[in-house]
Length: 177
Ligand SMILES: CC(C)(COP(=O)(O)OP(=O)(O)OC[C@H]1O[C@@H](n2cnc3c(N)ncnc32)[C@H](O)[C@@H]1OP(=O)(O)O)[C@@H](O)C(=O)NCCC(=O)NCCS
Image (cartoon, rainbow, N blue to C red):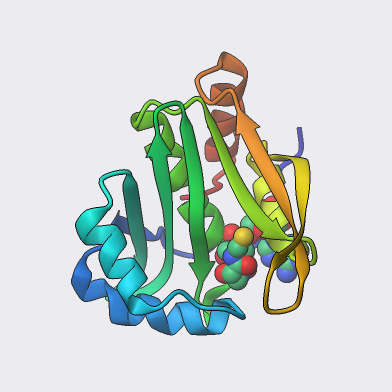
């Protein structure tokens, strides 16, 4: 399998659990990344009250350039959000964050992962497909801002030898570092 590692970043992203003090920087990225934003309170609630939630930020030196999160519910891990600051896209940071979310899902005991993505968001779909996600169905008019449909994507079995090998091959090729 030929892997595209041509747009990698120079230094690895330092990925750590998101804390309350990260939320203002996360909101800055959120505003440039999504047409309809989560309010800051949604992030505070996730961090403070949602026991199923696992959120991370990625730093280049001191600057937060990426974030992402999952809900882990028994065998199912749902990607709730993932974004990279506009200036830093196309350097492998989204991939590094997705890989961290996949690792966390496996650590939390999940066997599969799900997510929703806008039909028009081919960049994100390409990233998800690289990590074994396939489209299983769509939800018509899911996004209320423009009535756009959502594709529901799914990856599994995360615990299988086949998936482990796929992730190992990507890591070996330098992806998500
Ligand atoms: C989706 C997003 C997180 C990807 O992050 P990124 O750091 O730009 O992506 P990466 O550099 O890690 O690239 C990973 C893969 O994404 C896809 N991709 C990234 N940029 C792309 C582009 N300009 N055109 C097509 N595909 C692209 C490719 O599949 C790429 O793999 P490759 O390098 O092997 O080709 C980022 O574009 C983003 O924040 N978008 C706005 C928020 C968003 O749409 N989030 C997803 C909601 S479902």
